[in-house]
Image (cartoon, rainbow, N blue to C red; front, side):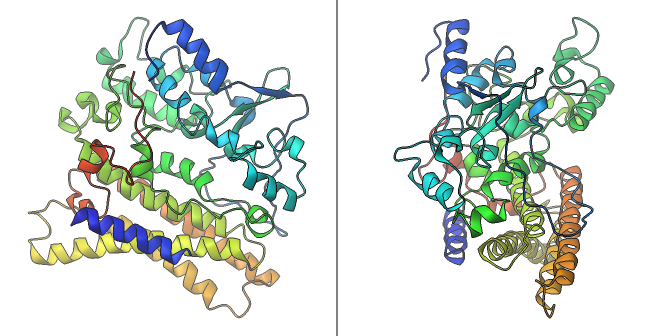
Length: 439
């Protein structure tokens, strides 16, 4: 039944929107870095800047998930400590086919059509265009030389790691020299996690941030790409849990030979409350809700960028409606169950006020703009920007409160909405995207 409910919800959403073997560590590492992330170099490559608004804007949304190319270290810095994770990522579609879409051939045919409409020369499509923001990773070295790292790299998802204030070295220092993670003090762990977060690292414990990074590309944030280039407005079939559990999965931290179903650092009981090991189904619940919150926040942020009435603005409003509708359904089912039990204690569903707040701020923004006489006049657009940006901030605040209050053990109600654990564990076709990589 739950599986049927999930498929029907996905179908409804669509209708609404129209081995590698281990031979030698050093050899395989060089092959992976040399082939899957072979760099395209140019001294003049630069990404096109996003559209700017015709009036001043405070850019209220606090979290910026774009990448600073001057701080990109590249996957070569990750593989020394994260061997299996790096090899799994290098073999994924994210690292390979994503960039191939910008080249000629079957995968690139649509990109060439879009480029032609946007007057982007095919010769610069994979080196200088706006497309490399999502289909590649732009890096600027110390000498100012630009390099395009093909595909989605480690830092595309986990945040740029370099620079004087970067998290690359910070995130793996567990105390005085010789201290291992297992013997790190709780105070040092909390400080390290907080400082890494401030430095821009997106950790598995903050599934909302990770999901926002995904939706930064899976919901297209450039109006001209959609309205002029006829680029799809977003990945209508993308769902954070299902896609994270497929061929892009790389949960090897506890065991470099086993690709765990969920993040092993998240599940590790070392610093969890009561030192209780986290269960996979609990993380799936948190990830699912975080994914819907991220979809809502990024859609609101993108809608604030709309300069004209058209496909882009309409699509973002639809995505807003879809995400808030899913969250509202979760809250409603919880409330219904709460009325049948004693304040939800038997089910342990917890308090979902944070989700209701996210739903409310999104609905208020949509309804207020919908009631405007002319939302596309200069005055109307400026008011709309303010409304949608403030709503995005409200959703972000709600997501932070949600993650502070819930570890998944109290969210059994979400099982009726998220993909079933059995389907995720068996990598059921049509639920996850491809098979997870194993050493």
